[in-house]
Image (cartoon, rainbow, N blue to C red; front, side, top):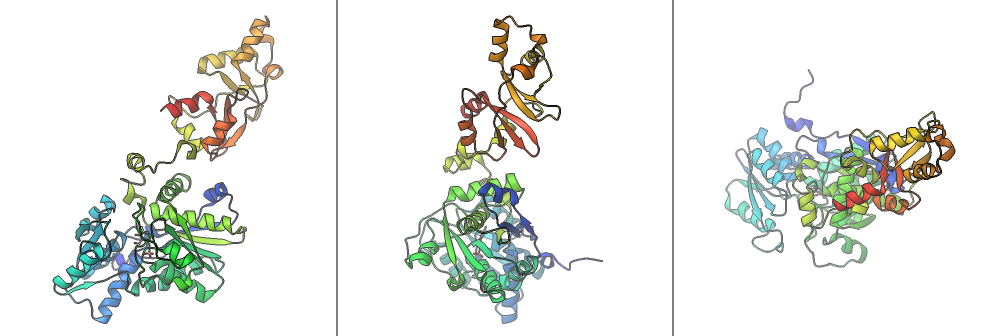
Length: 460
Ligand SMILES: Cc1ncc(COP(=O)(O)O)c(C=O)c1O
């Protein structure tokens, strides 16, 4: 039988997935691969460190039977620790900053952990900070052990022992760059050290949110005053010893809105449902490949850190995004989304008229479907022209017999064709007096977006 002795044995061996559609949209030729960390049992790549931290602490005698594990966590390390702790009989007390998603707090409680929520906007040394509260609890609770993912080298070791080797194995050693956000830096340092030992030319690239200290430290060796930001799990207001900056080749800086927009695109365009730190990592991989002009033989690996279900009240909640001014502007939406939201649109079949039909048939189609323009298609259903109601009215005024006039003899040029991924801004530019509609080619079939659709969408 193929059976795991406990859930801990199911951690690791997560798949690498190509994101060709986003890469194409970004104009990137390199292969961008995402390692799906949320396919670990706790829903994030932190399951790996949960196990490693506990195993190493047991071996070193820091963690004894019946002991209590204390950790400051943005949620995911807590999940990893809690999963490993359940089967070993340890109690868990987690301290979390108040900006973290409600879902994460509830999930930790579901696994039997106690969760203490502390204010985000205070200094690390403030007695209310989540670091200080964890340290105090460690002193107060007997037989407790503070796993301390910010200083405990078991954290990068977990990624050195498993994540790094898996990436090397699955890319057959052909990886060009590894890109990821940095919280504790355990992932970037552990994976980075392993990969550089195999091939010193592999580039290790961090992504840092505006407000965190890593970006300025790396580029100008300055300590900026940290500011709060919304993306969870990445960026720091101090330098954890688990982050080995000597391994890093570059750090890109990102704003909150881009993190969330890319996370949403990744879900809608690639079916990879993950959070804001993954948005940051994937943006970093795409941007690094683009800025360095990487080619088709280059392989850039990044991570889907945790599951999107943890962010239903934030990254995937339009009201929260709007309240925090994080919603993509209309212009960042794509043509295909307009097709999907057309009011009163039934099945998304394009109404068209064959070139061989009569002008009278075309007129009936316009009337039956309550539209003012219609694409003209050839025998293979490919658009070759267009007809507008004004042209038919002109024929009527000229006393032409509409049933004896062929569409192909009176049609105008075809509507412009755009891909489903075209930004609405570009669609709007194409809608002119001469072109009241554009055809949207998506997954091998066509839809139509008219000036009226765009106006109705903006009004909504
Ligand atoms: C959602 C999420 N993404 C990214 C990270 C960063 O990973 P690391 O701490 O290994 O740098 C974390 C860390 O807590 C996280 O919770």
